Image (cartoon, one colour):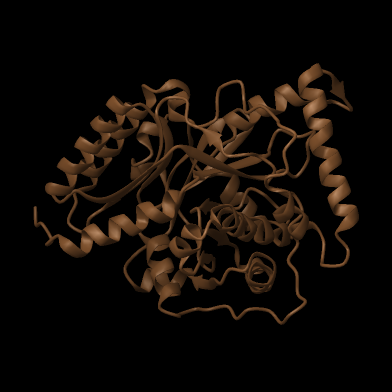
Length: 391
């Protein structure tokens, strides 16, 4: 669905290439009037992760983005993947269709993944009535990929309202399915190369001076940048395709209804086999080169982002992690931020691949043992124990 005013806004968004400056709020532009935020998250995601459903939790978050972008017929609408959920900025003429997609994806997640997902469509005017805003910029992750960054406090506020039951989108009736074309979940967990995979969330406090939080973000990112690949959990040469079926069931569920999955299974297994063969032989088939594709994967990952605060899942050594923890502890003690940090040995990759022949495939990174969900839980626990610090 084409909206000329939305297209004009998106094409004029500021784009920056130095992630250290992601907290520079002058780079961001406010969403136009009439937009809304499609918000979703898995209920009790930490308990689901404890039951071993971490891959399903991540796939649920990615499925929200896939379903909404598919009905909006464009991948350039701003979104943020949060591990167990997502937020997508929706233009006025897409709100009705995006609400239908949210309802359908919540039904699919319950029926096929065994998870309960909250969904809401939060009007931008409600965000602004609360004294907050939704401001957007784009970070250029690679020559072919930009990811939206959110500022202004509106995204976090919208998530809180959803958890309180406001602006809820009711789940669709049984049998409804979203369009999940392009979603892929074929990769094994990625082992840390530097020491540990660490998921970090750092949010400014209500009393923090913007320049103080901006300096903190710059310092934390600078430490992460010392790691190979800027801390990216994927290696520079890309992950090596393997003949394994780790994410097969979830992807087949997304592709076809029960009773119609044999052909989908054959197609996915065939695609995995062909990817491994082309990678090992370094042959090009129909313009597709597997080794070039996995290198693009590394460049097209969202392992670091800004969603009203800093969120990163990075591969880092012990010394770098100690330095980051010291920075965050000091900033928390000074009332600049609240933060959570979760360590694990592996990262998960969930993908949206509209076409193997294009370079705009997207890859979402989270920790394999809870990642962002566990970091958020830790942050909330710390906040409940600490008195507010007035600067």
